[in-house]
Amino acid sequence: MAKPFPPISQRVDDLGNIDTNPAIQLFGRRFFSDQTIPELLLELLLVATSEKLIGKTEIDRDSLLPSLAQLLSWPIGAPLEYAPKARLNLKLFAFLGSSKLNTRHDSHKQHYRDLIDSMLDPKHLSISGTMDATEVLRTLENLFLGFQSVSRQRTWCAVSFLPVAKELIAGESIWQETKAKAKREGIKDWDEALDYFSHNQQSFLARGGELLYLQMCNALRQDASTTRAWMTESSISTSQTEGDSQSLHSALTEAFATLFEACPDTVGKLAEFLDARVEGKTAEHTDFKSGQLRYAKCGWCPEESWREGILFAIEFVRICSALVDPVERLEQLEVLCALQVLRSLCAQSARYTSQPGGEQNGAGPLGYVWVISEPAGRHPAIKQISRRNVDAVQRMIYDAVRHPDIRNSPNLAGKDDASISKIYTSADSGYGYKLFLSLGKRLGLIVPKRGAGARFVLNEKLLRCLVMSTVRPGQRITYDSFKKLLFAHYGLAVDDASIVRSCLWSGTSRLSTVGGHSDSWLIEMLNASGMLIRLSDSCSLVTNPFGGAGGSL
Image (cartoon, rainbow, N blue to C red; front, side, top):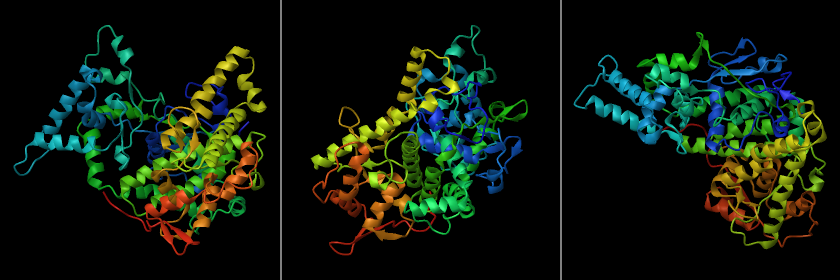
């Protein structure tokens, strides 16, 4: 079975239940189909920006990552813990007015009115000029409503902000409506209502972002000579700031910080003012327990996932250092997080199946391949190869979850066949190959969204992320080198040679050719996006034009 990082002795959930889900045993706790793409990044940043503990040792309050010394000397049995802020007052102020009427409990509406009255108090809000105080509050409400990221018809407290500032990043809060309705006497006021919010269900922030954060930490712990040898063997090029753990740790810390530098400090100060300064009892109730910070325990990732973890860390740094609009940077990081989930599912599955790997069998350095077909589907042969490849990837994940070490593990011992069948059905649908298919479709990597004939494609957003993550900002590389990097980082086969080789890995007859010019669509897409420089008919350069760092809201 996969060894966990952090090196916890028993892999259990918050309720003390041992992991029985085979997919969780293989991939870590956890990637889950209910978590949206934006919330993968949001949860990753939530862990990074929250106060953290390793066992009983506090990490420096301003540190977005544990130090290298802490990573290298991680104690056995100590999970990573972090203290997420709920920010209920801020969410109530920003989102109650736009939420569904039937989700507004009387106690919520009364507290909203109390908040407004407190803000109108001259000691909290002093207005100079002719503008009315009520108009100022309405403007502030619209401002924070504009930072809404994930709504999906949820109750106001379960809505997420776009993480443009640390003060907008909040943990999950769920209003327990059924439990509240069951109270015979009814809920009289906000103080009583606070007991009916749950902050630890992990329903929307379902631990996917935690796992991605742990993958980064795990990658930074690896021996430099080992990682350097693997990257050289895999034809993955790195700069001096990416080539060793010390430099990458510093670059990653700076990358996290860069995400919030573009947002004016005023936004964060206003958010903090609205959430905790006007009325502080709510934050004390949600963020503290018995006078101490309320910590949540992170799950774990497979220790052997350091390869995809180090790729993710390098790509994260490159996107953060690109000179692009801050909101677009967040969108590209959301795409990167989703790609990392898909890559992690495939790379870990490849380690636990008898699927032939290696360059000679058409697989990339991580042991799998994704055959990309023309988006318009005008090449029937490649379209069919890509469909078979999608089936092969799903079959690989399906088989890996049923590895004998997992099937015969103590976690599943003593269960009858009916129970085992039910467990595997849950693993496949929410955490395994169906997660891969559904997330790939949401990302636009797999089409069509409904119906048979699923195949891999690229869209403009994906292509932009691929260029920004494989080509350093301001760098130019040959088109052939770019295709090799796509294959090395993500296992993407886009041209004649790599697609032909992929047939063996996918379990189909190897072809001598697919007709040539199979990647002409990719050249057209790169050219249309302004990321291709044509030197001649036979030579082109792929460029990442977003050199430097900066940008502001």
